[in-house]
Length: 352
Ligand code: ACO
Image 1: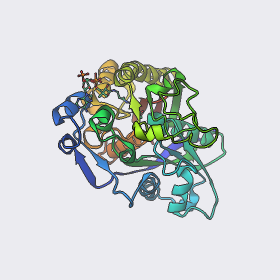
Image 2 (image 1 turned 90 degrees about the vertical axis):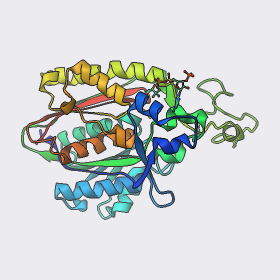
Image 3 (image 1 turned 180 degrees about the horizontal axis):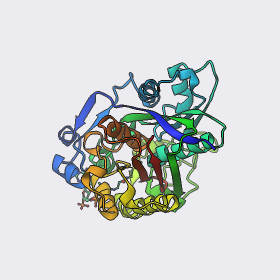
Image 4 (image 1 turned 30 degrees about the vertical axis):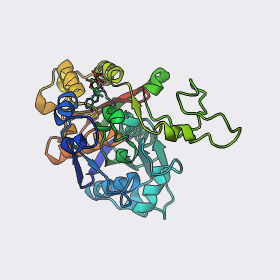
């Protein structure tokens, strides 16, 4: 059975830097509050009309392709993780395929919709395809354009200050060498689906709960359902988050799913060379670090610069760590994430 090796990494973040201080001018918040509660100092926003989720994904992908030393036509499958796609459909995978000009080979493109865990879920899917022998070279991308869908008034401040835009990419290839992706663990619990969600626009028609609460307009039998006037009037087209509940679950599930991966691989936290956690909140990462008994130099955090870029956060952080010389052959790299769904996941990689 072949193993799965990461042969190229790349990331792209927009040039436009938005500081906490700038946000103070838009809503009732403060640089001090944001830094103390989340660790974030600044984030990046796309230049509107010029870039978006699939185009940022393509920029990150081009770097990963070059570093892997392959031709784009060598790629035989695409996995694209995002919660902020360019279009409701089709997905970003095909849009990025077009942007990269990989149309000659007409390869498949799959979009993954698991939010913060999107990159780890995507890695697991790609790993299974490679280990089964179905594909040999897969392009995996996580990218987000949060800045187009946030509430910039005080009502949305708990969510809006957290998120940023960006993209990260990896080339995964089949190898006969020992190592690479050792294990991936994936979990979800839909009981908490609405605790961290963007409900509208959607086709739910209010059937998951209180019709009024979710902005469904019952006045028309057909039409006026996907986006109702009430959703627009009441500002119901933004993400909603029960921050404390997410936080409480995250600090339990992160260590749990990491231990699950370690147990399966017959390893312990002491074997981890570098932990690259999803960048949701610096306090969550620090809690996980303490729980695993890792030193500061064994955990890669960059939320200070980019905020939470959801599906892009792990590949951006992993690429930065690799560029900084923190990821070397033989190292045990652990990826872990928790987020909307709720979903949580981990991966262990013996770097080659
Ligand atoms: N600026 C100033 N004050 C604020 C802000 C803000 N941006 N946001 C909230 N507040 C206020 C609240 O209104 C509240 O005021 P009150 O005490 O007068 O009612 C106070 O600050 C405390 O609010 P909490 O929600 O209790 O603050 P907390 O310490 O929990 O921090 C946070 C909030 C940062 C959102 C935290 O709960 C968190 O990080 N949760 C996890 C988020 C996460 O991991 N999300 C998953 C990834 S996202 C995805 O999957 C799409």
